[in-house]
Structures are given as C-alpha cells and as structure tokens.
Image (cartoon, rainbow, N blue to C red):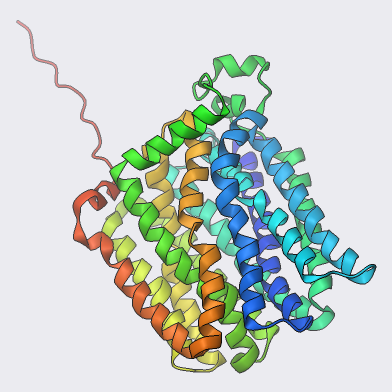
Length: 429
C-alpha cells in the first residue's frame, strides 16, 4: 500500500473504533434506565465510563511508546470489544447486576485514549509521506471522529429502539473487533515513525529520527508531565478544555438522554440529535481542513467555540422540541468542526516528536478530567432543580469560559509560527 492508502486506512480505523464508542454512549444510559435505574444511576454510569479515560491517558501514553503504535491501537479495540460483549452475555445468562455493568464500562474505557493517542502519533508521518499538509491531515483525522458520531448516534438510537440496549452493545463489540482487524492488516507507520511500532530490538529503531532513548517508564511520564506544566499555552488549553468538557459531558452523557426520554421521544430522537451534530461537525472539519492554513487561529477558535456550545444548550434550556434541537445541533456541529483541527495542529507544532504519545495522553487526561464529574453532577442537578434549569446554568458557564482566549497573553501562541526567512548573502567583490 502506498502512503495515501495507509493514511486512509488509519482514518478508517479511527471511524470504526469511534463509532463503537458512540453507540456505547447511546446504549449504556438506556441499559441503565431499562433495568429501573434513576437519573442518578445514569450519572454514575457516565462517571464509570469516563473516569478510566483520565487514568488511561497519563499511564497509557508512555506504555504506547514501548508497545508500538499499531499494536496499541489493535489491543485497545480488542479490550473494548471484549468487555462490552460481556455485558449482553451476562445479561442473557446469569444476570448483569449494576456493579458488574459499572465494572465492565470502566474497563472498556480504560484503553480508549491510549489507542487514539497511538493513531494520532502515526498521523503526521503518514501525512508527510502522502504529501498532505499537516493542518489538512489533522482536519481529516478530526473529521473521521465526527463521521463516527454521524454514523454511530443514529445507528445506536435505532438499535436501542428496535432491538434493545444489549443488542446494540453486541453491535458495538463487532465494531471494535473490525477496527482491530483493519489496524492489524492495513495500517503501517511511515518510515520515520517505524520505530514506534516495533519492538525494542527492531533494526529500524536506531535509524528513526523520532526515536529517543528511554529513561524508564516513570521518568518518561514525569518528563511529559513537566513539559505540559511548563508550557504556558498548554496550561491554558488544559484548563479551558477541562471546564468545557465537564459541561459538555453533563449535556451529552446525562442531561440530553434525560431530555430525550422526557421531551423528545426516547433513544431514537437522541440518536438523531447526536447524529445531526456529528454530521455537521464532520462537514465542518472537512471544509475547515482546506482553509485552516489561511485563517487566523485564535479568533476563529473563539467564535467557533462559543457557537459549538451555545445553541445546542440554549434550546433544551428553553424546553423546545425536536425540530429546534436538530437545527441547533447542526449549527453547533458546524462550528465544532473547526476546534480540534486548530488545537491538533498547534499540538503537533509544539510537542517534540519523541514525546508525542505520552504528552497526547497527558493532555487528553487533563482535558477529560472533568468529564466524569460532569455526568455525575448533572445527574444530581437534574434531580434537584430539573433538566431545563440545569441546561440553563450550563449554557451561561460555557459561554463565559469559551471567551477566555480573547484575553491574549499566552493564548497568542496559538497563532501559527512565522515562516523562517532564508539568510541573505552579501555580495562579495
């Protein structure tokens, strides 16, 4: 396979793997509700599904650098598929108590971020080999994630409505197995990234420009942590995305399923709303990938960030129905499509190549640290003050926080570096 074909294969693996994750986020809340669970139980399940991502990020990134990028992607999907398949198997045989469901959801999410970090590290090398500009490749990678929402959310909603949440989880396990097979057969790293995918004794390791001697597992983690803390831009990014992800998790994992069950008509409506957002975000990511190198990053980032949350949070706060939810999700999705391509390009520009896996894991863990609390707190708030009132509080906080990059300071480091000028040679006589 040539470089472009390998790049397409990597994107296909990302789509299939993330589709499995999206179907899981639709199926698990309704699996909890189907067994008589409350809004608080849905929040607890959301907590169990997201807290392992915070743990898997920092500890999995350094491990990925040792195991290999393709191998890590394959292993991640195999573990996720096996644990999710265990839920319906137990439910249909000996029974699935709530604690067992939580344990399986926890293990399933533990390897998600390391697997995605591995695929993200493979991206720049494959893009260079294929002759694709970095920002466009990042835009396509993020678009592949959005495409998985477009496919997975409606599919999950239809499967839950037609066959039940346990049958939907069987399909999820099949998706993860397919992603693992595709990665094992079709994905190969570019020549300058080969060392990341080979064992320590591989001859390619010594010739790789991205390979660096290891100082030990814990020292590598500490080195990545110091890099994140000392970089002024990444400190701000982690703080911003931590808060917005917490609020978004409150919306997507708890509030929106509850609102769909009470107002929109159930799981199928939830799937259409989430799928609309994902489809619009997919189009936004693809389109933005072709113009990203021509627009200012910071102002574009702020405008799109405000639109990514505001409309889709305001509509349920006002208690409006499905047509309004679909329109708001489409607008928010188009804006959201530009966010991760901007951040992804900045990260690849600022992170040393040999540290990317561990730093991606640490950045992901820091950004996701609020997500478990978001779903849990939203469950308590929904029972205390109601779903609509909670949506209202979330939209106000989200809008205020996303205006932070306009304050300047280290946020100016988001802009792309000025091209280096070639030195002018003086004429000699």
